[in-house]
Structures are given as structure tokens and as C-alpha cells.
Amino acid sequence: MQSTSKQFAAIREEFGSDSLARVEEMMAPGVLPRHPLQAGAKWILPGISQKAWHDPRSDPAITTLVDTLEGAHRSIKEDHRTAWRTKRGVFSDYEHYLTRQDDWQSLYLYRDGALVDNSAEAAPTAFDIIKNVAVRDELICPLLECHFSTLLPGSRIAPHCDLWNFSINLHFAVDVPDDCDITVAGETRGWEEGHCLLFDYSFEHHAENRGRRPRTCLLVDLWHPETTVPERKALTVLVTEVRKLLAEQ
Image (cartoon, rainbow, N blue to C red; front, top):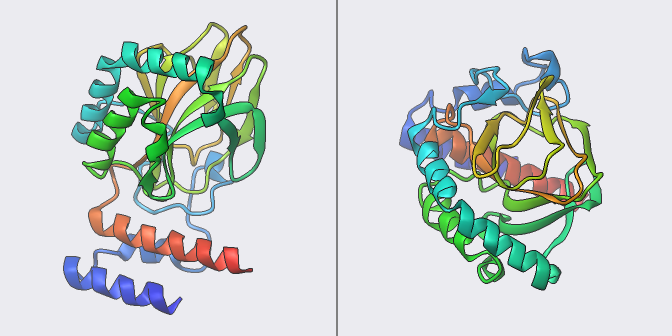
């Protein structure tokens, strides 16, 4: 990937010759040591803590996003309920890289490296927070997304690992009935409405709604706080190039 090599060289020139050492180690042939419950992940960036669950307020920048979301819970919940009732056309089946589920509905606020502007009317409060905190402060991983994730009653997300460990998943509990939970690396937790959970989704995880009404969380894919700025730049280049090559096949 000649283009990737040139862009990596430019990043090293700006940040130092050793700035991409971990990315290069990740790309080298062979399988790096990993936790057994990360076996399904494609890429494991070395040096990232092998910890499934994280304190949502352990990183100052993420804390700002968490505090802002939790402080706006009532408005975010009202916006979503109104959209669910009157604008169902803005929701779609969630397309995970492994599967597509019609009992898992999504309203995207950020996708394909950019804000989804036509979602601003349906979810104005959350859209503004994602725009003015997560995007402005470069917390969000441009390789992934932010969306309202609504699991219909009786739905289940099967156990799986996501693709890598260099981003981390924030769940803001917007509207949560009883009998809903998520299990990450064998530890099951329930969502507390109006509060956040944060976990490394390279670890095997699954979720279920056994309740009688939909469960909605706002999911935000954030850069793992243990990654550096040059690593984030290089990883964006790398994954974007890989996706282009796969699309051409």
C-alpha cells in the first residue's frame, strides 16, 4: 500500500521516528499476545490495557462528554421518543459488520467520518452534543459511528468481538426498561437510565432486551484514551486504505 507508506512517513516526520512503533508492530506478520476473549478481533494495538470495562470518568476529555450527555438526559430522551413516534423513516436496521438485524434499529448522528446532518432535526439535543463535544474535541473515531441503538423487545445481539481495540464504546442509557443487560468479557451489567457505560468492544460481548418495550442507548465510538495523536492519524489512514482495497475486490 504505497499511499499508506507515504502518509506514514509524513506522520513520522511530524511526530518523530518512533511515533508509529506500536502501529507497525500491530501490522507485522504474526499474532500478537491478546486476551483469550479478544480472539475474534482483527487488530490488537500493543500496549493498550487489556481491560474490558472502563470508568467513564477516568479520562478528562471523555468525562466532559459523559457529563454533557448525562446533564441533557431528559431532552435527549424526549427527542428520541418523539422521533420514534413521528419520524420512523429516519431509523434503519442496524448493519453490523457481522450481521443485519431488523429488531435492532438505529438513528445515525455520525457515520463515514462526518456528521449525519439530516439527523439534526430528529435528535437536536444529542446531535449538538456530538457535534460540539465529541467531534470538536476529536474524541470520536472517524472510522466508526455514533447512533441511537434501539433493541426491540425480545431482541438479542449474539456474542461477538468487534474489529480492534484502539477505539472504545460509550453507551449512554437513554430509555431502558427492566430486564435488559449487556455482558462484556463474561461480566454482565445493566444500563442505568441517564448514565454511561464504557467498554472495550474488542472483548467478546453480547446484549439482550427481555423487557416489554424498546431499549435505547446512544452509542459513541471513541478513540481509546491510551492511543496517541500520531497513532490515530496512522490508524485512520490504514483502515481507510484497507476498506478501499476490500471494496475493489
